[in-house]
Length: 131
Image 1: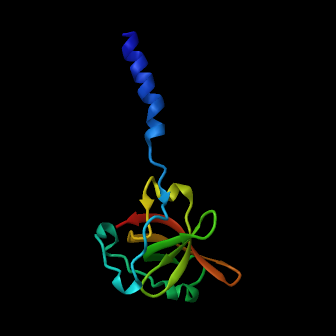
Image 2 (image 1 turned 120 degrees about the vertical axis):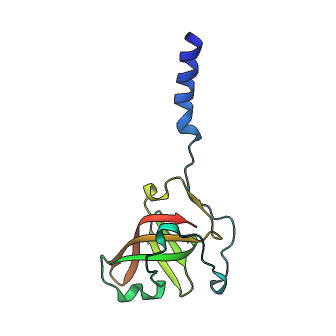
Image 3 (image 1 turned 45 degrees about the horizontal axis):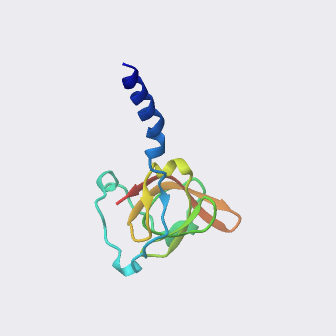
């Protein structure tokens, strides 16, 4: 009985250490914009995608869906996404990653709202889907 309790406690303590942190992994190279292919989208099939070059025309708080590749991390919680039309700045909080690891050659879809800070425009990501 004592061995069983010890084994259960060890498994309980070790479980968080085995969980994946997720986030952006800079290994790999993003494909050129003209080679971006659609992936399996499942729940995002009915959502209209927003082109990155249209973000400057949208007002703060507008809900958008972007699909592309994360190129690089540009700040502590900001990343650059490129789609077929151009690039966009994303703000991604740690909880949004949900243990997913994303490389530049991975196609992703993000859902979020437009934020404006002076002349700069970024998307505050609420959901990130790895295609």
